[in-house]
Amino acid sequence: MSEVIVRRLKNEKAVFLQELQDTLEGIRKTAFQWFESGHATDPDEWFQAERDLLWAPAVELAEAPGEFRMQMGVPEFGSKDLEVAALPDAIILKASAQNRAKKRERGPFYGEFGAKSLFRRFAFPAPIEEAGVTASLDRGTLTVVAPKKSAA
Image (cartoon, rainbow, N blue to C red; front, side, top):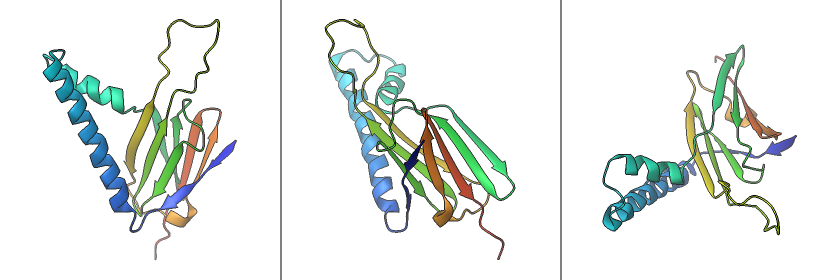
């Protein structure tokens, strides 16, 4: 099991929002390039551009007494690829990984392993203790535990 660093966002929130804006701009440019090249003739091409740039893995979010627990399947990423950021009411997950396949003399002649990006925000129904949020990666499953903020 590998520990994943959790950042507490205060002034850095703007940086994450800018990164999201940049990603959306990349989607817009890709869809437009497809349109100009004559490949995009239908709105589904926009969705394909989005799928080519962003990936949304399966997630399970559970509420338990005193905490929220999230598990996400991220087999393409290592602990150094993942960024977890804690806000007072949400968790932001960001990751980026390039194809790490080694060139082989013999092996598959087709592969779908390539660059992957992940950018997701999960809002909680109650405030969390940002300083207590932990994250770990074990055999391709990211687990994030966010303690609920105590009632004052």
